[in-house]
Image (cartoon, rainbow, N blue to C red; front, side, top):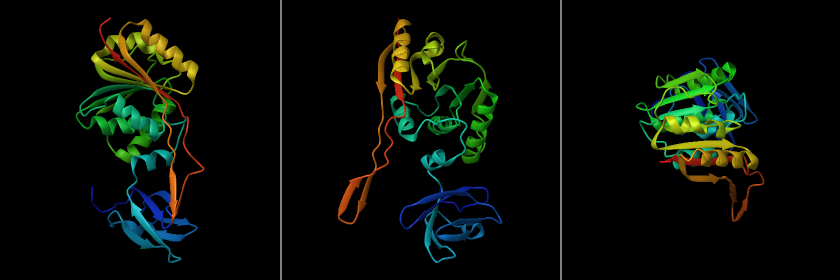
Length: 259
């Protein structure tokens, strides 16, 4: 999308050292940091990659934020599923354009945004949560970045008791006890459909895997932990960053097969 930046859009400002700042453009707004001040009016109408100078004469480049940039800065009601985990989830769960996906646990909307992008306008995402405040937070965060999403339905409900509708191509569970959903998942997933769950600790993974096995409806059960270590290159020197994103949780995948 190489269109001009417009008021109400989020933009990412990057300085010469690589530090970045997320802000939302307003007609009369301004951005201020240690590098100086930039008027929002100077950014509106520009294209991505434009170099501007602050009031102190410091260069800054403007871009639309990547999904990762927005997810890490948006308002949160709970811990998000991190981008490193989302990346693996989208590939291992094989989230494809046009898929019908059930998501349980709205969180702050991070995973919903990634799923909506992956399924595209022809897919359908149904997100369930037991808390209306979580649903509203997710709705606002997604709308702020993606705008209208008519193929996304948010529902108040407890998937431990039942799952809404079906059949689904994929199910994604960000819940404390995903194993409790396994019997419902076996009924509403299409043959070959994939169930994915995200939990933070080993006992939860063990209970999840045991529950999947007990249904006799899932095969190819796999669990992964993703770790990301950035590297810093300055002149002739290279070293790993002192701040890395190590453990955040475990992803478990299972595929529906004949009992």
